[in-house]
Structures are given as C-alpha cells and as structure tokens.
Length: 226
Image 1 (tube, rainbow, N blue to C red):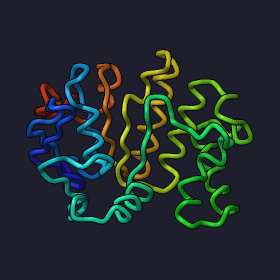
Image 2 (spheres, helix red, strand yellow; image 1 turned 45 degrees about the vertical axis):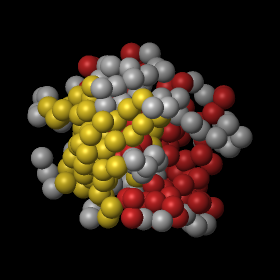
Image 3 (cartoon, rainbow, N blue to C red; image 1 turned 90 degrees about the horizontal axis):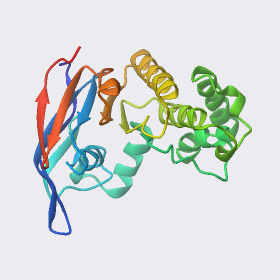
C-alpha cells in the first residue's frame, strides 16, 4: 500500500437499533483503488458514507491527510467534500434542471470560480470523458451511459484526491458499465486520485488494487486482487 491518505478506525453506526457498522476499519493509500464488497445490507455503503464525511459515525474516527473529520466544522467538511473528494453514485444524481455542462461546472461554481472559467474546465472534462456532445443537453435527454460519464466528469473536475464511487455501473448494461469503469480508472490514474469503489460485481472489483469485504458491519482487508 502507498502512504495512507484516508483511514477509518473502529467505525460504528446504528439505524433503528440495527448496527449498519459494528467496528469496521479500512485504509486507503494515495492513488490506490479499493473495492468495497459484500452482500446487500452488509454496511458497505454506510462505510463509504462515513469515510467520505457524509454520515457521522457514532464512534470511531475517520482521518484524511491528518485531519479528523469529526473534529471539523460542518462548513469545513462540506468544503472538503467539494474540493478534495469526488462522488459518483449509481444513478448519477445530476441536477435535472441544469445542462450537462452546468452540472459538471457546478462544483467549481460552488467553490467561487467565475462561470466562464468553470464552464471552460467543464468542457475539457466532458471531452476527456468522450461526452462533449452532451454539453447543452439536460440529463433527461442523454442515455444512461452518457449521463454516468457526465457524473464522472463532475466528480473529477475539481481535481479530487479521493473519488467515492457507489455502485457506479449498477444502472448500466455490461458494455456501458465497462466503458464508464475504464474511463474512471484511467482518468483517476492520470490524476493520481484514489478510488473507494462500492460494488457487488466481481467484474467491477477486478479494476481495483485490493478488496475490503464487509459482512455484518465489519470489514476484512484482502490484499492484492490482481
């Protein structure tokens, strides 16, 4: 493993008296691709959300580059997610009222970048993800595979250090899923970003450097899978 960039230790989280996480721990190295696998309801998405600072664990710690997320203010955690972290979800979660270009530019605009500069960068990323033809279309006007590539472009536009991908190919057919994963992995390697990849599909996990298996809210590290 490379130098750790993100470390979760003994994380516990309960929903309606059911333990989603029961002492789970995981470490992500700089530039590393880690697949988080496990059966439905095992706690793998909750683990991702805690590691990303979206959900606060009831106990345990998440440390990113020496910063303990629970010790940060809500404002600082939001800024961290906007600038240092990128997110790709199963259904893209693009803003339907915005064009694809505006969706990709949105994180930069929220960070205070001028519209012209933000959209210039967004166009470059749409081209890199091979969907520059979607720039002026709204999410409802593009295919699922195109929409997911737009979501990947949005995740990468800020130059994040860690990308959190939760079942990024779950709503796609095999061909589109392979294309999205190839573009995501290749681009992350070019930029040096680490990826935390939640999936239940072995063919998707095969893109990773190693696996973390989650069962009953606990995580087991599995070394190199390739």
